Image (cartoon, rainbow, N blue to C red; front, side):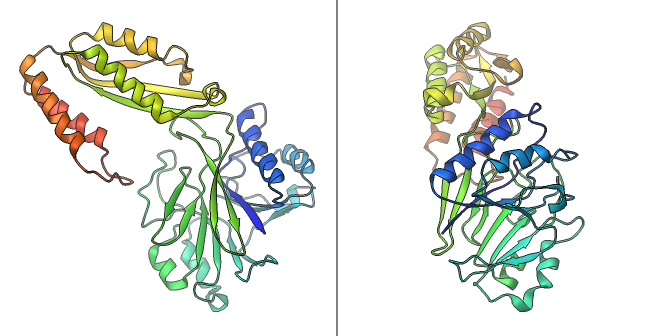
Length: 355
């Protein structure tokens, strides 16, 4: 048997954010086609202060063959089954063991609780936990691995530590709260991520997970999101064929996105150009032209405010050589560490600061 897993949908009123509702319904249609009749939602199904659960009741009634297993998150920690009428909605307001017929591994559902560590709650159930023979489902921060990747929610929320994993030894951990899809292979910890980006900081294609509860294998499935965000920063510096260089940079961005025609109609982008140019006006014209068929987030357009003028030939040559060397480096980009683009940007800034 397979179970679908998602989190951090942050539903509000349908009129306020219809794209979140539509994306969630796209997931339900997809799992229905795959003959999956159970979905686990690892917290923050609703946004804070949202209380009109009748809209969710109406939606779930269209999928009466699907059981919804919901744990509260930090944004909807007060939800309970009393707020719903549909009998296929189950809300776990307190920690609870769940067993599914095709799995010998029990699931410990761990709802979000304020000002408490996840390990403290797990400790209360330690006598019932067989090492490497149970699955943790919770909502909070994988504190020792992820360096606060959600700037909208600074601080720590119901943290789970490496020590907790080592002490209580779940076979698999499924978490909500962090909106970016993440996987820590050392500890078998998954964040499914938000299925629909909430704003321009949540970029790229989104996903949900499918867990085979017999084999405990997990598949990542691209979500048919109603909106896809891309946020790009382009580093430029003067070279002899500047316009060709800009167009190549833009081409590589579009190739990286690899959009289908249908996806192109759904994306919203933010493009920021930084660095130095010998012809800033021409730079703006080229970028505007190359992205004229795209929708910009908040109608911002291409931002070239942080591009400075420079036609220093010697610095130009130094920049070219430094860029070549940086691009030759064998870098393994990791969460929280500088990217190749970050390194190039700082190097170019340093070179031109001596002019």
